[in-house]
Length: 333
Image 1: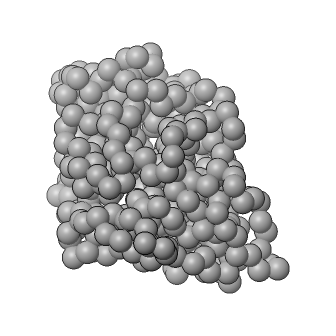
Image 2: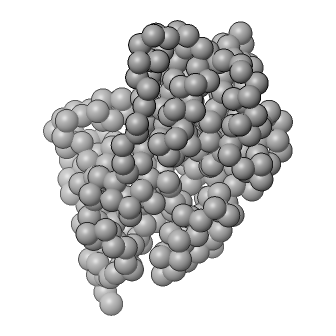
């Protein structure tokens, strides 16, 4: 039916495939035709009640610019028909935020598919022009789909100084862990990745990154200058805390529904610095993919059509999946 599109919508904690109106881009926005969208652990947590979000989910996407609604004040760096990826933090154009850092913590921000703004698990999505980044022709849709989480991985190096002398442990062997480990490896540090199941270590070993079980890491009694928690669960924080050396740094990348019981006395006594780390620089992520410094080969384990979005979400929540991709429009580029 004209004017309608399929969407995966969350309403009062229930996911469903629905028909909704194609949005009209407001001033300062572009209407994008979604090509492909990835399922993130945050999407799964939203369905479990995180943030109490109601709306269309999905924020890791690659799309084509369909329509541009620009004012005279807007700087337009994309063209109709161009493939793009988009930052998730949306602020009013009147706010004049030109940096992803300003948008990420703006008091009036909405977050695409997470908070106050419909996401990209649908056929069309309206996104602020300032959030968009052109995708170079050399990158496939599969690669481009990883730009948003890869940018989040890159943000760690914007916040924490890591060099060749540092010992770094990454806890969590999901898709974000694979990206974070590759980004941190570029510093030349001494890096180890740890997970709970041996079968999840293969993507790291295939990339020449040392990996082991968390239990093995804890048994070794080594302590690390920097520990990154991207486990996606409450246990990860305490495991990371046990592995950090006195005056070490703990980087938190997990968002989930629920609270974390934690030994904060240890944080005080050991003078551990805790760094919350969220969204990151898209330009850096695009460059790393284009230069081959980060690879995503083999990370997509399941593919679904948009109409099968509920099956896709179920697969993403299962232990056998790494990255689940939803193909929305046409064959992959």
